[in-house]
Image 1 (cartoon, rainbow, N blue to C red):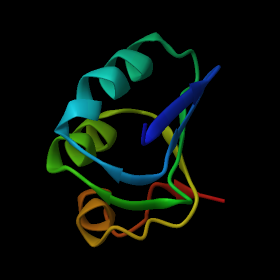
Image 2 (image 1 turned 135 degrees about the vertical axis):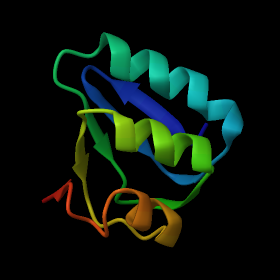
Image 3 (image 1 turned 45 degrees about the vertical axis):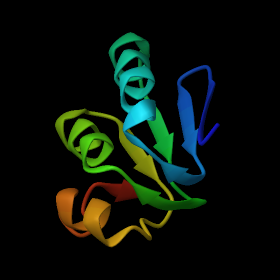
Image 4 (image 1 turned 90 degrees about the vertical axis):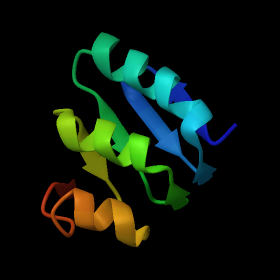
Length: 80
């Protein structure tokens, strides 16, 4: 499973596909102060990139996926 959830933190590892989008959206809607850790992320489906772009989640870690980095404004929303 490429996305794991622990409290208000979602950690995406490896490759996240369209099949992971619905769960991520549900997490982002229910978390009080959502954090998404992309430290070990290799690649995401564009639907996930769009969900993250539209969310107010804190993006933690270096964004390695070029498409996601572009969608998020080249890491402008990334935090350490």
